[in-house]
Length: 194
Image (cartoon, helix red, strand yellow):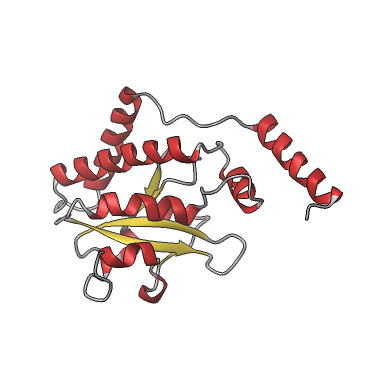
C-alpha cells in the first residue's frame, strides 16, 4: 500500500530524474565505430600478444551490444537515477549487474584466444556495490586489466585501466557468486545449457 509520503517521494524522484537528465542515446553508427576503434586500441595496449583482430571484435561487440541494451533499458545519463527507478519499481531492469550479465554472454561467445574476460565486483555488500567486466591479455594479472562498464555512463560503454579506476577497488567475483544466468557459459559441466 502506498502512503502519502511514499507517493510524494516517488513523484519527487521522478520529477528530479526528468529535470536533471534526459535519456541517453547510444550514438550514431559513426560515433560507435569511432569509439570501438578507441577501445580496440586500448585492448591492444594490454600486451603485444593481443590479437588486433580479436581486440576489434571484442570492441565492436561491446559497443554495439551496449547500444542495444541502452535501447532496451532506456537509461538516464546518471546511473543512480536508473537505480532509483528500478528500486522503486518504476523500471523493471537496469542495475549494474543486469547490464554486466546481459553484455557478458556476447563477449564470451567470441571465443577469445588472446584476451580473457573476468567477472568483477567493487565494494561488494555495501550500498556502493558495483559490477563490471575486466578484460586482460591471456595470462595477464587481473590488476593489469581493462574495466568494461556498460552501466556507469547510463548505457554508453565506459572503459579504463583497472589501476586508474580509483573509485572502484575491483576484485574478481568469486566462482560461488557467479550469477545463475551465466553459469551455463562458465561452468558447462555443472550447469548444462537447456
